[in-house]
Image (cartoon, rainbow, N blue to C red; front, side, top):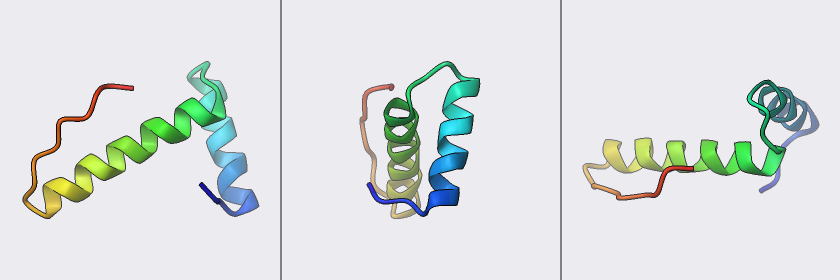
Length: 50
């Protein structure tokens, strides 16, 4: 995943607030975004919780 420096800084900041690694936080955000996207498209998605 490629992020602009400011986006990566924000992800690291939010990850630290949740006591997560940046990779774990970004995976969780990706899965949440994917679920929302598929919901908008009218598709169901069974993704495991991160």
